[in-house]
Length: 288
Image 1: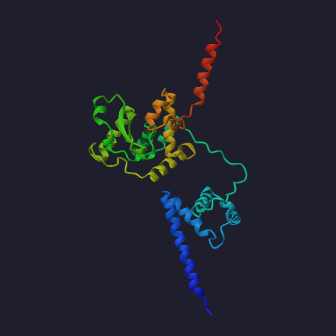
Image 2 (image 1 turned 30 degrees about the horizontal axis):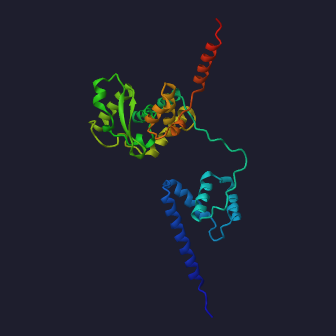
Image 3 (image 1 turned 90 degrees about the vertical axis):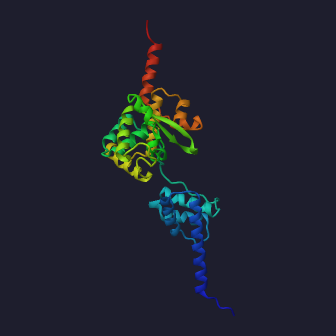
C-alpha cells in the first residue's frame, strides 16, 4: 500500500501558494500600480483564506472580518484578486449607510496665496505658483529644467510675461505663460541653484511624493485641509476661464486633445455667475 508523505504534500502546497503569490505580484506590476498600493494589496493577500474554495460566501466572510477596516484599498484588493482569478461572477457588497459624495475641492486665488504664505522655502513657493499660473500637471512641473524657459525673450522686456516650454502627455509640447514677477524669481532661483540657465537637469530636484507631502502640510496649516497638486491645475484653469479664456483656448493651454476633457477642469465661480445674472436682469428690467 502506497504511503502518503505528508511533509511532501505540505511542501507541494506551499510551493503552489508561493508560485501563485508571485504570479499575483507580477499581475499587479503589469497594471503599473504604485509600490505603495501593491504593498497594501499583498498585505490583504496574505490574510485571504486561499486554502478554501473561492465563492461568494468566502468573499463576504472575508469582508466581514475587516468590517471596521473595510477601506477602499481592501475592497480594491478583492476586486483585483477576483480579476486575477477570473472570478468576476462574484460581487463585492456595497458599503451600507450614506456614501460620502466625491467632490473635487476647488480653491480660490486667495486660498492659494494663504498656502503660499505658510511656506518658508523659496523653491516650494515657486513650485506652487508654477502649478497654479501654468496649470501644470505634477509630472510636468517636476520635470522642468532651466532650459525649459525662454530666458532671452523675457530678458529683452522683463515687464512682459515669460514663456515656459512643457512636455505633457503623449510627449506633446506646448507653451505656458508666466507673470513677470514669477519669471524674475525663477531667474534668480535658477542662477543661485544652477549657476547658469543652460543646464538640462531638473530645476527643483524633488520627487512627486515629496512635493505632495510638502503641499499637504502647507495646505493643512493654511486652510485646515489637504490639497493635492492636481487641484492647483484645476484652480489655474478656472482662473483663466474667469479671466476670459474660452474652452478651445483653454484646451490648447492645458494640452488636452479634446474639449470634453477640458470641461472637467472648469469650475465656475458662483459669485461671478450671480454678478453676471444681476447685471443682465437689471439691464433687461431697467425702467426708463
